[in-house]
Length: 204
Image 1 (cartoon, rainbow, N blue to C red):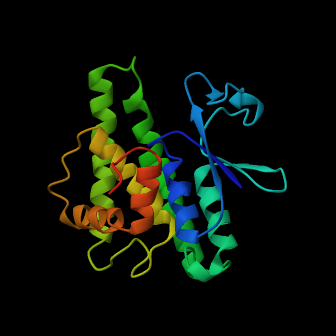
Image 2 (cartoon, rainbow, N blue to C red):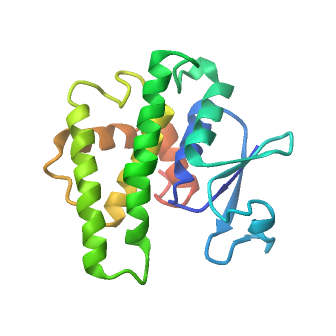
């Protein structure tokens, strides 16, 4: 498999999932502005959406959209318990979290990265995201991870959003559950490896 990624982008989520799953993969870096690969190839010919993540399967098929990719990864490594079994109540709970993260967090972060959006508009989206983080904080009171005691692919996605919050200088000091969660996920060896491979932290 090949994971098309951009350092620190939402492709960090499936990158973490692949490492946690122990599946073999190759990393292919994408310049999202130029829509080019490192070798100069046109990324749009691979993924017409022009976005990461994109996962090229050994069969030649391409899978896009992060929440779908991470579930596929989890299902390919069922022994790792990165997602509850299909058709279970817990699987739908995972879907609920993945949908929440992609629609309420991810999509509200997007405008804050815009170089042309006015500061007051960015402040509006920042306030909106903070409200969503407060909800997540309230749900983390009794569990180590979003689904309880077990790390799932939803945790890698939420951690990616929390890394964006760092870049945007969010003040999360009033959300102790979320801060403890961020530290817990960030300390996982496979999360550290993904960050290192993407050049987001120095290798130990």
